[in-house]
Image (cartoon, rainbow, N blue to C red):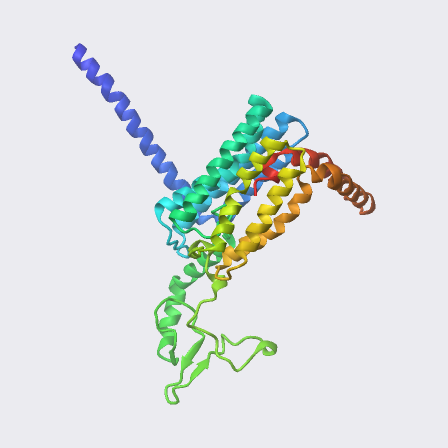
Length: 382
């Protein structure tokens, strides 16, 4: 009797565990299917979480930590759902290895949670613990980026490595695929196929046909449906062979291999946060030397990367973004404390007093600006 009871006790937890796994798999499959079928609704849910984080932000430490937690979770939710849509969509065909994608995912997660981790560390362990956590995060990020640069030839790495998806393009692609696979459309195509001239788009890829070949003359002529407006019409045939690079998703672009001076420039950009933290430890955060060192390294990195022009669309956009972010040095201490703060607050106050309806918004921004500026990962991370 005791043996039977012991066997029964061993079987019950095993069955319970199997039922839990089955329920989890069913729920996961349902969620993936829902995300794939309703990308616009998913975007609205994500946007709601982000708005809640804005409403929770306040001047108090507890409000700020809670707001950043909700904001980080909303970013992770977007990243998580983007992964589902990437795997399901037919327009994303990345050529990166699985190990490289995994490292890029870790970097993306770090980018999304770094501010919350900084504030939580300051709340739990004080100012010293905050700077220790900042140094650990920056060291991890730099090592991962250097490994991607040298091991996988990652080129100019965007920040975050996985940018948010263009959900509108996914919706349009789904609508096109549904319309091309509908029975009515297939029937009309079969009925008119015998009566129309042979098309140059004979690949059977369900793409709209923009030209056809004349049966007697052999000339390639544009169809009436593909003709542009009269004011934009030319005698040139539409290009049906080459695909517009702007239509290629950034996830499908191969990174450019960096050599020589551009490689040195990317290494400087990756190691700049560590050099800045070392300078802060040596001279203090109110000294101009760390500020000048970081600014010099950023400018040198951009100049060295400009020595090459063989970049893809995403890398060119990242280089322009880095150039624009040089303006952030006006919001970084000690420049912000000594020069920018009084002028910026004065401009915001004047704007709020002169433009109707902007007083409340400007007042809220003026109260939050000093809080935002003290957060390291908001001003110094990128």
